[in-house]
Image (tube, rainbow, N blue to C red; front, side, top):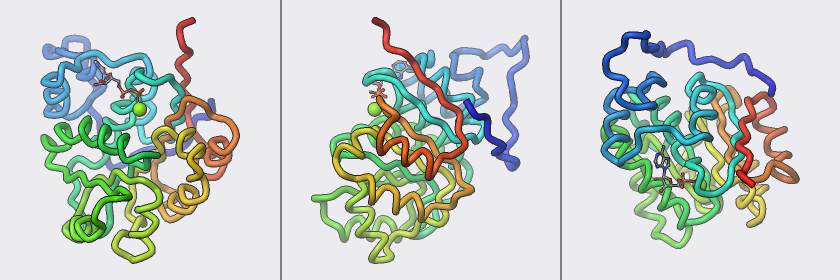
Length: 235
Ligand code: ADP
Ligand code: MG
């Protein structure tokens, strides 16, 4: 594990003291915005899963993170919560999302959106999706109106960037979800090109079931400094 020197100087995160009365959930102990903790509780989510327990402190501290854990372990919130926490309080900029989540498939994009939309809503954040096979004009208009958090498949996002309907130079936090599947589906090159358009000073999170081959190449190019959190499967 290589601790990075990154930090988020513009945010102070209050830590609960021993006598904190309202430690209603394990998420409250992480210093998350209260509305977010409440929204999680409404979804029945009160205790972080092991991968969330591992990833959240690093990611909430602003560091790059590699998270390796099997399907069903709760990776979506392990990156979703830090993304929303980073974006909370900011305003949407036309054509320039401040948060970016790259996913391999339309189905996964929809799943991630479903998981994060109710949480984003309580923070007043706009979430948008950019997916292949869907009308592009609607996506162009939504980007123009301003999206805080963009969930995208690489091909369509590449098209929109090429048309200058989307600019990535304001991305504060970028996520690769299912990085192994992104690479398996042949998206190494577009993902590499898209990440290269985001500020190298931004935060990056990469979630995957495996971390070798092209995933490792992405890591070396875009997250050279990171915290690694690996949850071994129970055998
Ligand atoms: P992965 O991406 O690792 O495959 P998901 O993020 O899709 O896993 O989560 C799998 C399921 O677990 C989802 O239905 C999600 O709502 C649920 N889940 C995630 N985190 C928690 C939690 N802390 N408490 C209860 N359920 C959770
Ligand atoms: Mg997942």
